[in-house]
Length: 346
Image (tube, rainbow, N blue to C red; front, side):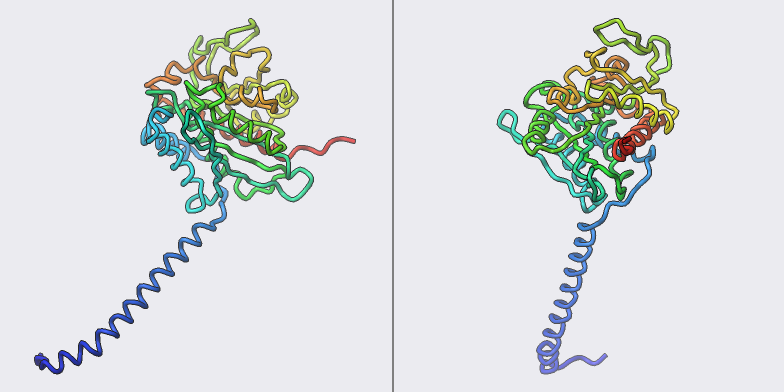
């Protein structure tokens, strides 16, 4: 190959360098606009319905309880990680939901409840809201698989299963924070702050469905402890899911119980909160009950059955995932009924 003379080299640089810069600029612009277009496409992604499945529930529980671990106000880094995981997973770039943050202050710090709405179809009931809640924080030193990664996993999977549904009522999901000790049952809990905001905005919430511990099921006699209080009958085997209603929601127990048992093989135990007040404890459900909302607590009864509830041993490997999935399927059926009430008889 012949060598270039100095004059030829200078001429090549004079002519070739601008052409190279132009081509590089065109390539850079193409990459920039292509990436931006992909970002726009992902940001405006419409949520796509996904059937409930055990693999999703497992992955969500493991991410929260094993990947992130103990998450509460005392460890703000992991609490923030849990918040960002839920927000980014549900958000426009992934599952396609618009996630809003409800900010509130507690002890001089800002905390975030995360909220997504699936608006009802145009009609007279679109302004009526069915609110589903679960908390994403844990008790201190607990990885919180059952309390309450199961609740959050159910909430996230249910959001996917209802994507694209044309329900009569609006379905709202709220992932709340500061629901474990020491904030549980106080004015500094996420449920207290959010209930107050609902009242301020005068949102027409017709039912609150609170998900708190959904993954522990035992078949041994005596595995279920009775709640403290009145000596009314209570199952002695911990193989069921409990649905506890406050006075405003008692009429729902029968119809929703029928929907649940049609959709799943898991036994359901409907209870009235007035008969077993200890079942509510300092839960999110108790907060919404006290705020005057129709409320249903869906739970495996927590500490009455699960010896590791709020304890260091509350790890993902202890969750009964097949029955957890059955529980979420039953909850899905109940929500569909709540979202599409039968017309009132004349």
